[in-house]
Every structure is written in structure tokens, then in C-alpha cells.
Length: 162
Length: 66
Image 1 (cartoon, one colour):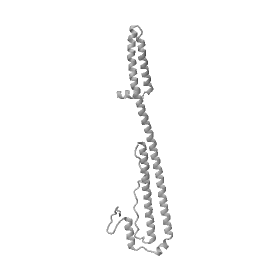
Image 2 (image 1 turned 45 degrees about the horizontal axis):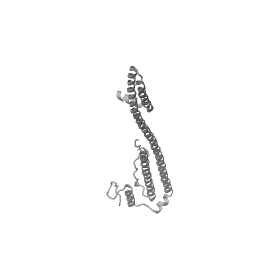
Image 3 (image 1 turned 30 degrees about the vertical axis):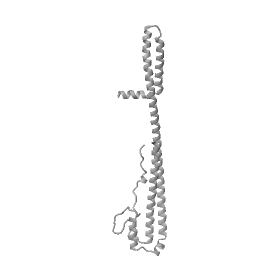
């Protein structure tokens, strides 16, 4: 938990922060040499301490600058991918709505045509029937065709003639 | 990205063709019945084509995210 917290806290810091730390480390490292050149024992000791502190900051800063840069790249990639997904999901929804509207309209047109044809048949029913009457055999055969059956069978088949 | 659900209009079961009732044996009844059955066929044809369009469209969208 603690490690996770530290890692995430470090990754939340911007890249420039770690760059600044590394730069500060470099500056300290450089000036430690200057301080060590002062001819006092205390200054020399302080210079050595500052040198190691500067070196640690420089190395740590460089390491974390790289890490933060890579993290920033991945975060940018993830953000771009998420945006792409959001756009694609909206496109999918829009496509569904368009196809739904299209199929509803087309089926309505088919139904209207069936209705109009039925009206025309009704209008001419007497004329049509005056010229022909269906025999019982014709009725049976027609219904077999409708139900996809043959003589002696009651089950439908999906077989096709090839 | 999740694969989207198809519109409910496409998921309705296919209607069966209607046979001629035994009290309807005139030519006009036959034509009327054939007209209705053809209508059923054309509705299914439209739904079948819509399914194809739906799949092609969603596949393109889905693959654009990969």
C-alpha cells in the first residue's frame, strides 16, 4: 500500500519537476567543487556532503525524468485510445439508429404495398373469380408449397433443390 | 470497446408463410394469400439486408478502434 502510494505520488508529479531536481543536483555538484576549494575544514566537509547530495539529486532526477516522460507518453496513448473508443461507441449508436430507422421505413413500405395490392384484389374479386375457381387439389398443393411440405409429410424441410 | 447489440427490429423472429384457409378456395383468395406471403418474404429480405449492413458497419467501427 505504502509502495503503491509512493509510486503513484511520484508519477503524479510533472516531468519538469524531476528535470528541475536533476538540474539542481547538477548545480549542487558543480558548486560542491567550488566550496571544497575554500581552505577551511568545515567548508571542505560541507562541500563533500553537498557533492553527494548533488550527485544523488542528479541521478535520481535523471532517472525519474525518464520515468515520468515514459509515463506521460503512456498516459497520452491511453487518453487517445479512450477518446477513440468514445467516438467509436457513439458511431456505433448512430449506425444502429440509422439502420433501425431504415428497416422500419422499408418494412412499412412493404406492408403498404401488400395492403394496396389486397385492396386492388378485393376491388376485382368478382371478375377474378368469374374466370376461375380453385380445385381442392390446387388448394392442397398450394398449401404444401406454402408450408414447404410434400405429400405424406408434415414436417418442414430446409433442403433446397440443386 | 464492447460489441454493440443489434436493434430490436432486427431481432424479431421470422413470420411463417400463411396457408390458405379451407373456406377460401377462390382464385382471388389465392392471389391475396400469395400477395401477403410475398409481403412476408420482402420484409424478411429487408431485415436480412439490414443485418448484413449492420454487421459490416459495426465491424468497420470496431476495427477502427484496434
